[in-house]
Length: 551
Image 1 (cartoon, helix red, strand yellow):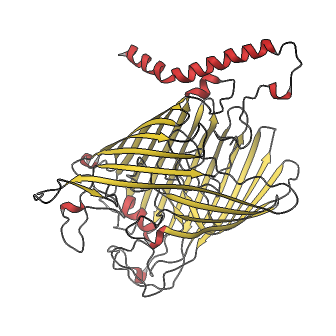
Image 2 (cartoon, one colour):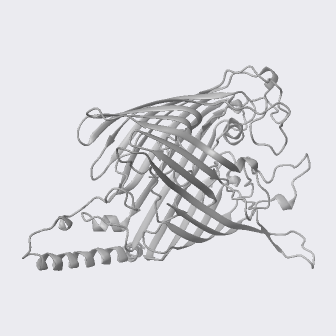
Image 3 (cartoon, helix red, strand yellow):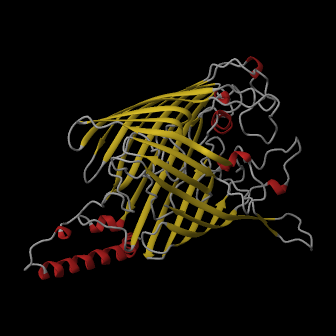
């Protein structure tokens, strides 16, 4: 058995190894041919990709994910470099960038008691699966849709940014949720103060989001959930970076944001409405961070984080009929504090990896808003998914996440730089673990964990194959809710480092006896007080066509 494992590793890594050996032979021939001529600038060995190169030139990052980054996970076998273009001193310039990913998805199941005029199998154009974007049980194994257009105008001192986005393109959809059409999702200014020696100061002001505890190189990671938190709204973030040495820098960051909008009285709520109700207060988030960055061949960065989400609003204290265990007519002031830490190794020949941990202490979190914690972008979802309704979302949450991606070609080519224009085998492993203490006895003491692995083989300039496996245990108190996910994919593109991909995928869920969806897609919950029928059971397989491009 051990020899089989060794053989498998050799077969997987063979294309990259052959490419590296071929490159070495060509380099030796070139060295002999050039021995009689003086060296030229282009002959100098480069071990680090140049600025802006597609496989990733991000050598040092700040304490959080850049507000320029899209809210979408990368397609297997590639990265999505996403940074604002550098502006030259002088006049103002206009730039247009964006990211598009759209998916046609059909989930499938079998029909009970089919008649002679009916198929035994059923197809659902609106997928009816356990997978929900960024949720506790979500794996992102079947990629979804996200379209984002970014408009930048400015110079080296000040830049204005406007982002239009949606996660549900209207054409081809049966109905449109108003919350999916984000329109002007973010609009902010970025001030980059002139450098004073070793000190750099950046101030971001406007409507945007910050993300802390993301596990991916250019995003929050494979499970699309920030481990520490992502405050959003209208506010500001001030970042100071101080260079101690040529390679080592200290970073301090502070910001305050507010979600000041409220629903107008009489506009809701209803049983299908998962947006804030008229009874929910305006909320605010204050956050502070301290960390370091170490540049070089193996870049490393890390930080300590503190976020405080709270409300103190006396207006519109109406009881919400959707919340059975809290009376908003005499509502308490909600609050949640989060302390966290993260450490990451930025993409190099040893791979790209990150680990993050956070501890959240919540009081009546159901009334909060303005911060995404572990994929829940509202206190209502956080309460339904993790803390439970009894106590109105009061409890403590410990969350740990880790992710590691390894390119065999980069490792075998080292110390030569691998530019991505050749065969490669990329292996990824990722995991999330959560422990909950709650005032709700049904949620108290619950452990949640999920882990997965993916292998992507880039064999040809236009073709790659990938396969992913995930194991999800959403409730340590009931092992029958545990399920597994298997998802093979075929990937097509125009060249090795092209900006577009088309992915054909098949996803199969091996559901447990008691597996069910989670808010807002709990397909086995009663509808209007009536028992759930077979039509609302979970589908166990999906066929998907996903296509996307970044620019």
